[in-house]
Image (cartoon, rainbow, N blue to C red):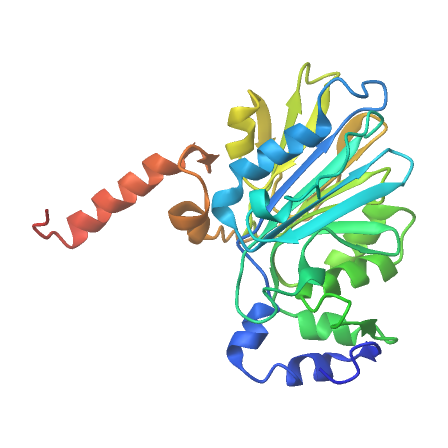
Length: 317
């Protein structure tokens, strides 16, 4: 791509991707997201790194193209590791981050390998820009317009990512607002499509879901919900099962949740009047043990098969 080290406009970004497969490759979906946040008064009661990697293994069925995770000490300082392939490959050869006793926040992302840029290491999330780290599941259908709304353009390609997630992160970082939550709320007003975001500045963690509820996102607690040992965020409940988590809920369509100072609170709730949950989550992406929209994914798939047979009965093996 010409001028990879220079700011690029939306026209250049999409014109340079002339094949449809290239354009699709810049719009990532089907990813795994997970985050764990320790309240300030409860550091180190769990092995944060081990918990995060265990959750990543529980989300491996969603994506095997690459994986990355980051840990933060609660003051804004973070460490990152990224790699291509499954988690056991991406983090081999001593690439695991060392255990950090004072770590309070961790974010993990597993990436679905679509065409065009699937082996571009800078695309492995969490992505970081201007002190904000972002993990993203879904896609922005108006990524070109969002990019065009950034007058100064953005660095893209080469040593930089070339995905719509990178465009979203740049828009969030440059949005108006006092703090991460306000920036995300303001930036998302210009976004279209389906998404689940988990972002952090190393102190606050903010999670959000698109207004139509196309992409799922869940919030859980470990321990007493009124004074939890940890908060968890995940794109599906599968990791909660292995972590013996009982208290969890959907992040609602259009909801933005802020976790800071040991508390999780809804800072915005702007749902669309029409909900459009992606059926692909149920029929393909989620683990059969996950519970989504009030029922186990396994049972939803069985019921779908029964309904299909009623409409189109055939004799089969």
